[in-house]
Length: 219
Ligand SMILES: N[C@@H](CCC(=O)N[C@@H](CS)C(=O)NCC(=O)O)C(=O)O
Image (cartoon, rainbow, N blue to C red; front, side, top):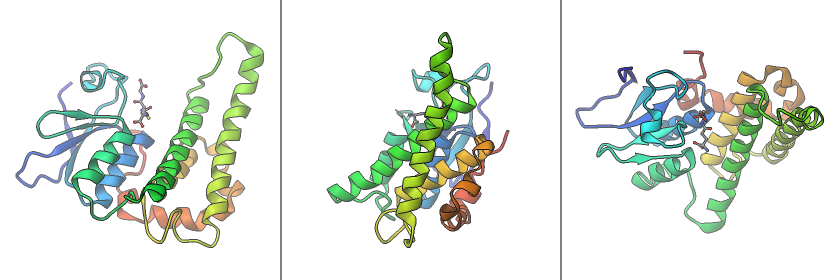
């Protein structure tokens, strides 16, 4: 497969490349992050499961996102990529440098990643294959993780504009890709009906150009 450039903001310099797909919430995390920081990157579509995918050449784990630097060095996974992007361009600050603030924001990211993992576990039908009893408990267990995770976000955002502190941070990016992924990959969870306290916040996030230009699609 030839690497095709899905989206490019070429400025004459060699650009970093984010490798991933339009449906992956982890890829969306790093794309939204780069757009919010106004960092020029190429976006290259490569689905690890497609024949001819080059993802495993970059990341032995065969997972996306991967960030390929202009010197060919590779950064993964999404947690490390956002750290890298924050380091190369500190403004606007999306991860606090102050210790407690940084831990708080990164904890929201961990929560969002865990919600997404639980959605993937259900939608991809992962779980104990050879034990009917354990298998029966698997889906309710995953749903409970999503339920408790969203509930914590809903309680925290009540009466606030942003999840952490006085401005937009990685914590809000995290909430955004997690909520949107629940809606996209698990519509039967009925997130909007069950968590009305998240509606205004989620709609506000989704109007940001970074989220608008990274909407999941089947392509
Ligand atoms: N912890 C990783 C998770 C990445 C991940 O699970 N990516 C999925 C797509 S959403 C993937 O590449 N799956 C392909 C595979 O596991 O073979 C991160 O934060 O980047």
